[in-house]
Every structure is written in structure tokens, then in C-alpha cells.
Length: 244
Ligand SMILES: [Zn+2]
Image 1 (cartoon, rainbow, N blue to C red):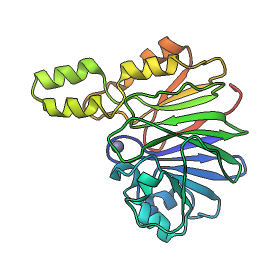
Image 2: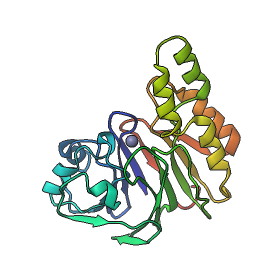
Image 3: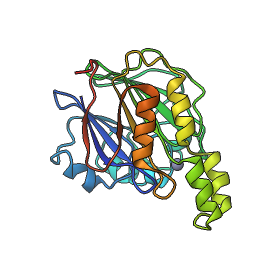
Image 4: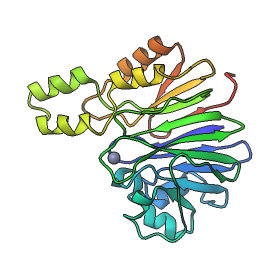
């Protein structure tokens, strides 16, 4: 399974899982349809579904364009209510959904949005993949994960320094604490799960001004002993069931 990152962060989020048979699951609709098409050779026929975590524009801003192209869109009722789309599947929390050969279980996360979800995704090539973005906390524990994509938004110390220096307004901190995952919570959250079978950890949705890419990668590597990647635009990462 290949993970293609088209965008990650506060401006535009878009990820594509691409199987060996070219079946695709698109995560988020934060880039234009054109941008998505450019990355899949303009062929939408292999897209099983577009999963959307929540309604904020950096994750769902182009949903209408995707809907106009007749892509199947799946999200919570709360998320879909913000967009007048036609080909949608309302996902209930903790129920299982099948899109082609992908099985998806949405779970509620903690963010300042209507009904935000994280997703547990299964495909025989990548095994169990956890996808969690825009959440300051995850109340669930997951068994037998093989790969993890998780938000690692800001470092508490960098944020405090930025507030002291006047670079960031203190009101921004209040919002971050209730909506996004710090590096410190990210490490705790990862470690609260059984990591025995985990091959890769991909850190996503880093803040532009309150993060440290190198320190995050190194810290999570040292804390978990796993392969750690920081999601960069246009990266492609192999995420398989087995570690080779
Ligand atoms: Zn958001």
C-alpha cells in the first residue's frame, strides 16, 4: 500500500491510500479536484471513497467539487450537514463500512467541529491503519495496529515561547488546547496503544509556527522505537502489513 501525501497542515489536507491494484481511498478534501486529479493521472474510476474527518475548510473545503465529479463521500452527519452534496454516505460512529476492499470504522474525536471523526482503516495490504487528525485527545485504545497516521500539531514549549515573544496571541493557545494535539499528547497517545505490530508512524498536521519537524520525528522515534515520518507535501510512503 502506498500513502501519497498531497497536503498536510493548517492550509490543506489530502492523503491518498493506493493499493497494488490501484484501488484508492482518499482521506480529506482539502485540495481542489484539479490538484487531486493531477496526482492520480486524472482517473477517478479507482477511488472507492473520499473520507472526510470534519467540516473545516482545510479538510473539506473542496467537497462540493468532488461531489460534482460524482465521487462517493463519507463522513459524519454533522460534517455532511455543512455541505449540500448528493453522493454521500452518512457514517455512524463505531460502525463498520466497506468501500471496495477497504473497511472503515469511524470514531468520535475531540475538536471544535460539529461531529469530527477519526478513522480506523483496514486493508489486507496495510493491515490496520489509525488515522486521527484535529483532535487534542483520543479516548479509544486500538488493538493490533500496523500503521499510524496521527496529528502532532504543536510543542507546548514552542507555543509558550511564541506567546511570550508576542508572535502568537494567547487566545490562540486556548483554542489549540481544546482542538489540536500537542507533541507531548501525541507521544502519550501513541504509547497508550499496543505497538507490537506497528510498522510506521506518520506525523501529520504540524503547525507552521509552533512545531519542530526534526525534534518531533526524533522524539517519537526514541519514544516508540518505530519508523517515524513527518508528512510532507508530495511524499510517498510504503505502508504495509509486514515491516518490509
Ligand atoms: Zn479543524
